[in-house]
Length: 93
Image (cartoon, rainbow, N blue to C red; front, side, top):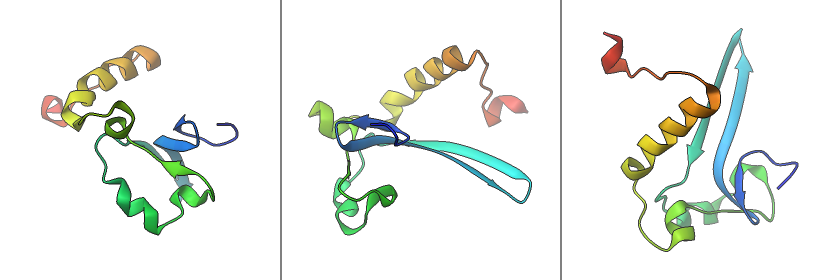
């Protein structure tokens, strides 16, 4: 929910999105919780947000969702949204 970044299901974060800038280098990334063991988050304040939780696709859908089931459709959508072509390290030669 605004003003928080990421993908949310109610008050629980499903996907973290971040950008880091430092030493003339910019990096970015995301973490989509597919089948994450959510019990670890009971010991911290996730993303420093008091009163907010963390969830996963597996928890929300009530069935196991493995990363390998999500990866290809995610990458296809990424290419479509950002109008780009992704190249794997194996393809790069």
